[in-house]
Structures are given as C-alpha cells and as structure tokens.
Length: 88
Image (cartoon, rainbow, N blue to C red):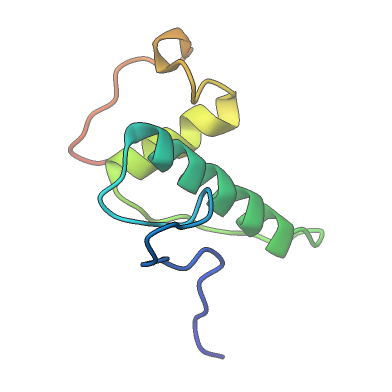
C-alpha cells in the first residue's frame, strides 16, 4: 500500500475549511488539525485500531487543545507550559 493523505494540501485560491493551505492563520491551523483528527479517527475506528501521530510542536499543541475543546481559547487550557524542544 502507498500512503494517501486523509487531508491533502489544497493549493487553490479558495481551499475548503480545514484543508492544509500555507501560509495559514492560527484559526486555520486549528481548523486543519480538527479536520485531520476527525478523519484519522473515522478512518481508524475499528476496535483495537491504533494510530501514532508524528508532527511538529504547533500542530501537536493545536491537536491537544482541539481534543480538550479549548482550540478557540488556549488561555483556558488545563495543560501547563509545553517545551517547544520536543513533545513525546
């Protein structure tokens, strides 16, 4: 099997909400990771199906905030400060 992105980059002038399109605003980042997580969880919804998400710190932080329900207001998160040197 070859790799196929569940949320491919859209290089059009008017990308759909959540599609990767660079440069992006902070809100576009939250929209992108939210859509990506939704698609990953939908694609891997079988019982005992595991996933591993490898990304860079801004996306990982946005994913954590999205799953916590705080993507619109990161100042209210229950997470403490995060190291930008690496998250495992």
